[in-house]
Length: 411
View 1 (cartoon, rainbow, N blue to C red):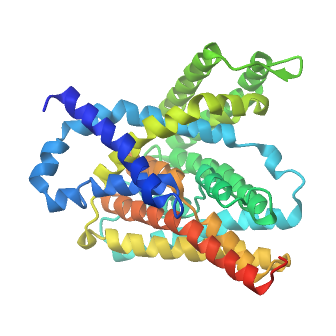
View 2 (cartoon, one colour; view 1 turned 60 degrees about the vertical axis):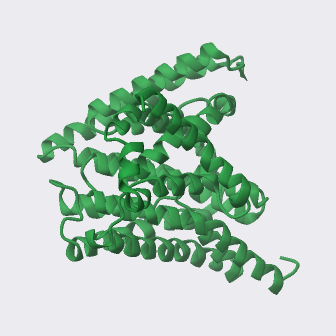
């Protein structure tokens, strides 16, 4: 089949097939992102490549990932930008000490548990870390990945469950926002200090990153505010603004990539400084095409890079990181909530919701794989962990909330 025809066949499959399957049978039970990841895994070497290797090699020749590469990176860079647009520091203001404890615990405790799991994996599975990476970088990378809570996917789950405004919805979204901020800071620090062979090289990367962050906040942010907000009112976002912001995203990603961090850090940082008065308009302009057309290529490329072979250690990676993620997220959210006076069922429902990993986890894992911190087997095991924890978030939350309704009808 000609390369163009093969690409168009892939496009039709990766864009349309997950949505059709989700619409037919999965809408009630899981987010679309879970179906998209699952289809990518089924069409990858783990399933289709094992069951029909000759057909798979014809359908996905080695050159296929190269032809997708630009689309994949464009998609996840703009996803990082969209995540930054969602980020709002006012989410943290006025919530009180109880929220501060819960939100901090839901990132710090799972990250610590993940670091322990990473240390165990280094001991139990030879070659689980990426070539040339240090043990501490691998353990911290696993810890950060275990600490992820997916803000956009969680927001979609809460909308579907009609839980945006009650206590549990506000608490879950607030925790996810704090987790999001902590995640990007942690991943930037990890990438900076693991960028060079010597500490002075890492120090240069860290200093350059801090200087760029300061320039964004103190120079670029006021300029964007003057351009996008006039006389206290947001402008109407037009194609001209979208082009201007798209150039800004690309340049910011280019700068952080060349600084030794990662392009996605720059995409997120640029989104985070967009005035919140226009953030919703910008999201409305870019989000539908991003989620429906660009990101499915990322899910498919993730599936093609995921080869789950139990003997390679991927099974143990999956088991340990899943146990660490679910247990630590549930406990870190549930115990503070219980101390605030919530019932055990409502507290555990909150823990189930903040266990959601979603697309953000795949983005983090891809960054760690690209930087050589994770081996392919560790990447494969943790992709399955992300799939399972995201798929379980809604059913577990509904189970605990259903029990809570039975035990206290007025609650």
